[in-house]
Image (cartoon, rainbow, N blue to C red; front, side, top):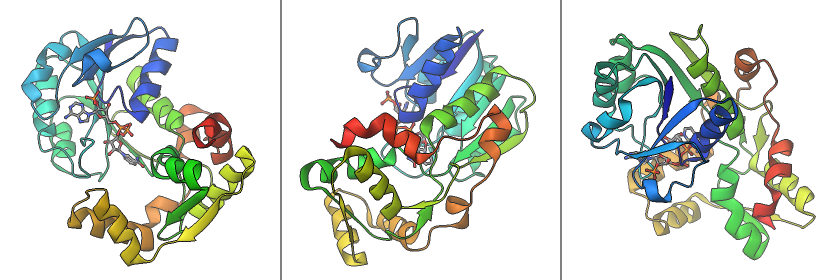
Length: 273
Ligand SMILES: NC(=O)c1ccc[n+]([C@@H]2O[C@H](COP(=O)([O-])OP(=O)(O)OC[C@H]3O[C@@H](n4cnc5c(N)ncnc54)[C@H](OP(=O)(O)O)[C@@H]3O)[C@@H](O)[C@H]2O)c1
């Protein structure tokens, strides 16, 4: 049986691929740039673009289970083409789909529920790895993290735990029709996370609270649209309860506790040094 991994070159997808390969599974990975995918030996890498679902048809051949991401890396919005992706997967004979859902209930979730596919929806909260994307540069260059809403907490999750839940749902039975919201084991503020990184690398890191206007300007400089900026301001000032409420789901699904931020930092501290 072949398992197809979309988003295979992404933060979660790479962990899924590694974990499946370690279990001896046959893995096919989709990428828009297969030549740069840099995935483990034995993984079949094929070209495909979720924005053009028909390009995925060759990738679906002989596949039993599919890990499907729902958004592109350019936008927070769910890909409008995803319902077609699900339809083509079913037509190609795929039996099972595990979906990384962001909003929980949109056109792709409906299309999958209306199909004959076995499905599991998995909704992780913020990834621990966001610390690299968001803070690596300023920590390395200036020993500082600047952010709006530094005291707000998030139950951030280790990407390897998200992947482990996906691997379980892709390989084992008993998950059909389940919706898993995944969190880490504790709710930490940005200030607390920065303190933990600082302790691990043995270097002082200052935290500076940004005003809303400063945060908006920074996001504008990064090229974000006003609509996305409004959303990010809202998330920073008033994060939704789902983002900071610790849930036992990871342990319930994979049988071991979710990894802590301290563990994540000890594995990734070189990124900040
Ligand atoms: N970061 C968070 O806190 C957070 C929280 C909840 C949910 N999420 C969601 O989780 C999902 C996975 O995130 P991630 O961090 O693992 O991914 P990522 O590191 O952002 O990488 C994006 C992945 O998506 C693939 N991709 C993007 N657009 C594509 C397209 N049009 N066709 C085919 N592949 C496409 C890329 O593949 P190629 O470049 O190789 O084609 C890459 O593998 C994302 O949808 C994200 O929105 C993130």
